[in-house]
Length: 89
Image 1 (tube, rainbow, N blue to C red):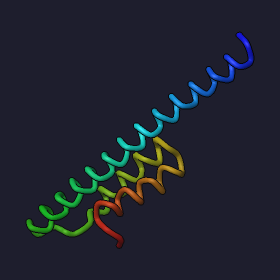
Image 2 (image 1 turned 135 degrees about the vertical axis):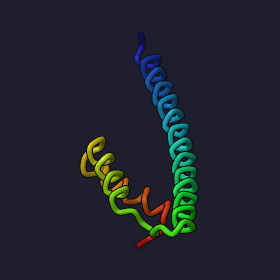
Image 3 (image 1 turned 180 degrees about the vertical axis):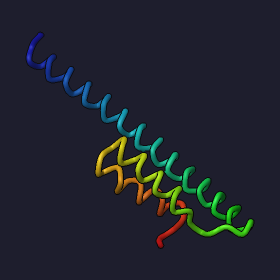
Image 4 (image 1 turned 90 degrees about the vertical axis):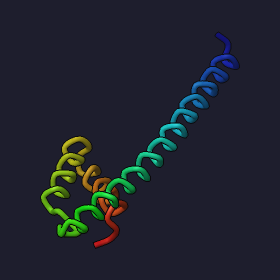
């Protein structure tokens, strides 16, 4: 394989991988928005039935799940996800 062909193959592979990243990012955004919608609905139903705005045990379980799966970065991601669904504290 010539160096020109190898370079083109590398460029093609990079373009394919970047395309995949773009698709994954679009899916993450879609899922993020859907999760926030569902979380807001859960909160509305809970409060309409006399519950509290937050359920700390539930939030802790979500934080733990993300931390276990992703390490310390998971905690930060979980905090952002929780905030998207309930708003800032």
